[in-house]
Structures are given as structure tokens and as C-alpha cells.
Image (cartoon, rainbow, N blue to C red; front, side, top):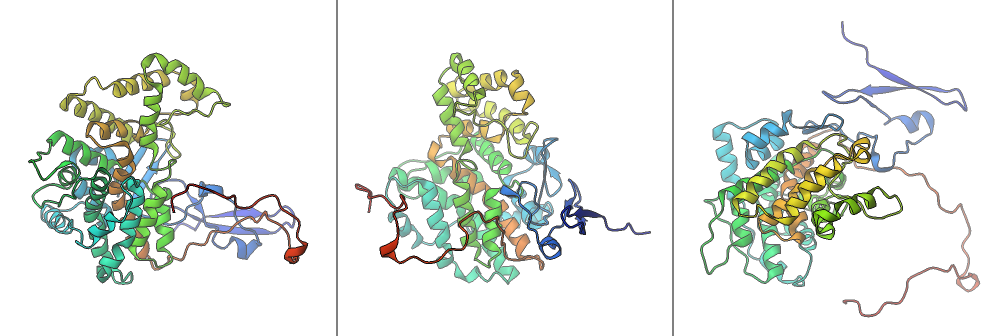
Amino acid sequence: MSEQPRTVTLIDEATGKRVELPVVQGTMGPPSIDISGLYRATGYFAYDPGFLSTAACRSQITYIDGEQGVLLYRGYPIEQLAERSTFLEVAYLLLYGELPTAAELADFSRIITHHTMINENLKEFFRGFYHDAHPMAIMVGVVGSLSAFYHDSTDIHDPRHREIAAHRLIAKMPTIAAAAYKHSVGEPIVYPRNDLSYAANFLQMMFAVPTERYEVDPVAERALDLLLILHADHEQNASTATVRQAGSSGADPFACVAAGIASLWGPAHGGAAEAVVRMLEEIGTVDNIPRYIARAKDKSDPFRLMGFGHRVYKNYDPRAKIIRKTCMDLLESVGQQSDPLFELALRLEEIALQDEYFLERRLYPNVDFYSGIIYRALGIPVQMFTVMFAVARTVGWVAHWMEMMADPAHKIGRPRQVYTGAGRRDYVPVELRKPAGHGPRATNGERR
């Protein structure tokens, strides 16, 4: 006997009207109330700032249980993937839904490797940016321009075009990121090599110079590959939601990912690892930790402990546990066991996790707490931290974009609002208007 569909009854106390709303249940996680017909049935909109209680889509890609500290890619625990897998294997999993066979992985790796080159004319684009341009600004511009160079794969209604565009984005993102870095330091752009792994290729494009041979440290290669796995996807975060929102209008995948990069650039999202390092530099020494802990607990003080707590996780971020050991291994390998920031981070974590204030609020270290230290050990400058995040998250972005485009039920995103502006009023001729006391201010000395 089939189970009856569940509903939730909504009662309007003002009118006594009752409305039955369907309940949608996923494979795991809490059920959701389907409010797609709420306005039609009641005349009400739902109000949910930040969409913290609203499921915007159905997805089979990533599952998070923030209460238990669980992260699954296509059902596989992040701990198992981090220990046994590689980034390209995880990329295949996120794109296609299953782990590849040896032959499938070899073929996928070959495809990605042979897409890593960028059009030679695209290199001219980099020269148009100021030498001190932020690498994320360059990333937004260059990735957004890809549809002008690879318009043979922008038919979003063609599944093969979608797949080719996904491959190109995953393959070319490290090349573009490394080129953005080389532009900022005035060094020549380094071409990718087909004999290197995804992570090793990225490192050699970042740090090789034409005058000498560059050897990739295998420990550094594995550490970067692990970071890419941990950052590959994280469900409906701000940047992924941005990619989906842009894609819902029918925009091409390169434009959608450029929009995701712009969203990721925000300090509340992709800039957290950079903020952790700057916070540790501000704290300076272990002796200063108690003073900064006190400041973090003072509501009148704007100082916050960066890298603690998470919008979703109310337990220890599973990625942070994995990355902590990798951080230790890498620092030992590159001879930075005494990195003062790492020692400071360890001590800060120890002190904070013994403090009732943080324990009661379930403010545990997240993945950003240690990732910035690993990037430092790899020689990656602070302004590139968010770029590294973008390289990894591109896989998740294109997986979600492809999933949405293949869903016949997807619609253009159109959030509603609670209007709080002026009521209806009549136009006043300019000569009769009174000064409003606001408007643009004159500026001098700006770049033009």
C-alpha cells in the first residue's frame, strides 16, 4: 500500500482560511514545505531573508548535515574522498554522479589535461589590467570573456555543448588563475604541461620561470590536491546559488561562472581564509591571545575570531579536521615547523575550544582556519587565496549548472520582496522640489 503524500495545514487566523501545503522529502535531511503555490492560494508571500529556511531547488550533488558535521559528495563521505581520491576523480563524481572506472578516469583526465591551454589572443586581455589589479577582478573579467573565444560550446540546450563547456572551465581555470598571478608580479605567463597532474600543473604555472627548471614537491602537490577536493562543492552556498540564478535566465556557462566568482570574492564567503591569516598577523603572539579572545566576546568590539563557526555547521567542520593534519605534514615537509602563525593558530584553537563562550555557541574551527596557512606554506600570496577557492569551486559550480539545465522543471529565478519604500505619490516639477539632503558627492583624485 503506497504511503499518502504528507501535507502541512496553514491557517490564516484573520480569516480562518485553511490551506494544505505539500511536504517534499529528500533522501536525507529535514522535509521541506512546498510553498510554490502559497501566493496563489493565500495572497501571501513567504519572507525569508538570506533564504536560510528555503530550499531553492532539488539537487543530487552534495548533502550537508550541519548538526552532525557531515559532508557527502554524491553520497560519499568527504573523509573517504580526501583520504583515497584525487581532485579529478572527485570532479568526475560531481559531474556525472558516480565514481569513474580506471578507464573512465584516464579518459576524463586526458580530456581535462588537453583543455588546459587558453587561446593565445586571450593572453592580450591580461595586459589590459593594471599591474596592481586584484587577481579576483582579473578572474571575473577573463572568465566572463571566455564565451567570446569558445562560442562553439555555448548552446545551453545542447547536452554535448554543456559538457564541453564544463570541461573547458575546469581545465582552464588554473591556467587563468596562474596567469592572473604572473601578471601581478610582472612575470611571463607559463604554459601548462600535459605530463603533470592537475595540482602539479597549477603549481608549476604559478611558480616556474623560463630561466630555470621547476620541480614540484609531491607533498605540496598532494596538499593542494586535497584543498581542491575539500573546496570542490558545498551545496547551495552564495556563489553556487549565484551561478544557478544567473543560469536560470539562460545565460551561457562562462557568464554564470564569472558571476559565481564575483559572489565568491565577498569577504563573508571566499575571503575567509585571507581574513584568518590577517587576524593571526594582528594577534601576533600567543601572549596576546587572551586579550583578543576577550575582544571577540565583547559585543561592543568589532573584532571577530575569523575561521570559527559556520553558517551551516553547528559542529566541527569535517573539512577542518582533515586539513589540520595536512597542514602539519606540509609544514614539516617544507621546513616550516616553526611557522609562528601555525603555532599561534594551534594555540588559539586550543584556548577557544576550552572557553564556554565558544562551546555554548558551537563556534568550532572551519575549513578556512587552516587553509590559509597551507597556502602560505605553498608560497601562495594572500591576495590569491580566494582565487584558489574559485579554482576548486568551479567544479561544483558547473556540476550544479549542468544539473539545473538538464532539469525540465527549472524556471528563471525571481525572488519576491516586502516593499518598504514610499507610497504612491505624484511627480513634482524640478523647480518646485525641496532639497532632500542627499545625492552624489564631488570626488577628486580618482583613477579615470
